[in-house]
Image (cartoon, rainbow, N blue to C red; front, side, top):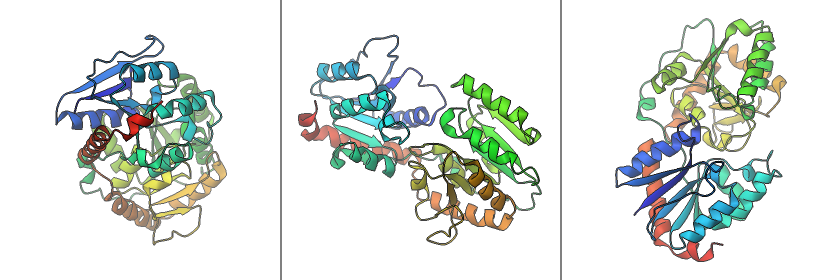
Length: 361
């Protein structure tokens, strides 16, 4: 099976999608060569692929907002199998469904013989967009094997440490979190934010200004981008993980935090709840099945977020119970080796079936 992976030329950025791509490509390369083609639509009118007629072309979803080049590429390789790797699509993000990019994505979706979604939420949302369910497979992000190692002992810490791992971008809800933390100045805590601040520089500058103006700026540490080793160390130093995103298709950082035994406070959006199964509660409601691994709040609601954080910060026993549930739930997550093998099996299945190619347009 000849595999070509078409990715944006920002393939080295530290986003969940690019990390997923690199880990899956590395797994596929264990079985043979993989052609990785970077494409910058702003500089190159259309991608150029040197792929045989029976190739499998795996396309990163960031590229499908460019309708004409994708259709041209599809026409130039009529017997190849085209598969969409759906990290993020505007058309499945409720806040973006009317955006021009969402309209373009809907027009391009029929060009693909199959879709790999990264969460059950994404699969169902794509079915709602008219993609036949039989053409959609789910391959969630994997975990690095090191995250399976025993977790650290968090007992006896006087000042709870909150951690967020998210690039500094508007969709991550970070301004909401700073507003919520500003309401908790009477409690002891520290918050560390790990994430690249170069992807949306104007937003990052406004976030830094909000932190400086807050009454709790001396308790906030913004580390920027860190190495994989340092990132795992940050999870182990933390007592709880907070992700107030406006939308997530899945969230690799949440899954890593759970594997390191951290209780999670997150928003009830997109594919985030899929990470927790039944081990989740909304607001202060009880979990359906024992202690929750996570508690969820609405997005853009600093008051609700502050209430949940207040409860969690004041109760070390609750943090331990939720962290244990999170660690247990994470045992169901695949490793990166398993995810790559699953993607390979999906590509083999699609390449062997002519059904999808007959229906593309």
